[in-house]
Length: 209
Image 1: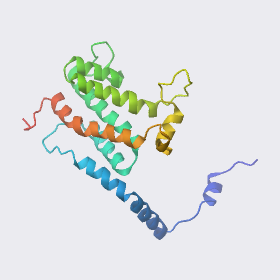
Image 2: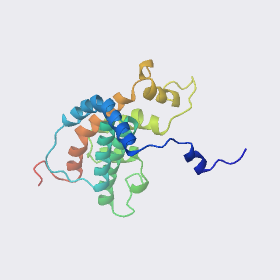
Image 3: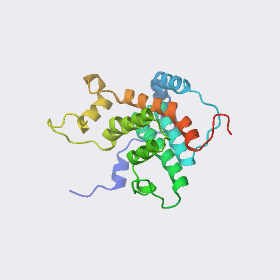
Image 4: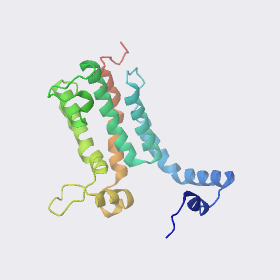
């Protein structure tokens, strides 16, 4: 069988004019409009206009998580929400511990996982017990099953396997859960907690002082 080249593949692709592309975008926007309206209302139901000091990378993750939610990229919104919290907490410990600094249990700040950072922040009273539980839930129940899907057996029913995760995306009506609802929970937590936590970690109250 001869090798298939990139040119062979491209040669079999349909050609689209600018008008065709514009029409495809318009049709896609029309189909997605109702869902985006509802998701935008959800985002706007959380208002926080006070000054917040947020490290640039953590803030970029925060905004991209919200954008993913708005556009209906639900798995991406879950992952980005967790990354936003992780980078926010890690940034504070980078500043507090210095270059090459270590957490209390000896792991370097840059090598620490999300669970390590949450545990340290709870020990330092930067997180309340309920907040740390919420972040652990975000990691264990929502983020990890999509980032680390497993080929589980019947002897391990508590672990979400790759089939369950796929059904949450492709066929939520089958009862495995819905990625859209998981993403809503993740973004709701991000909206409620991220900016107040940033103020607390960086010692700035809501008046900006």
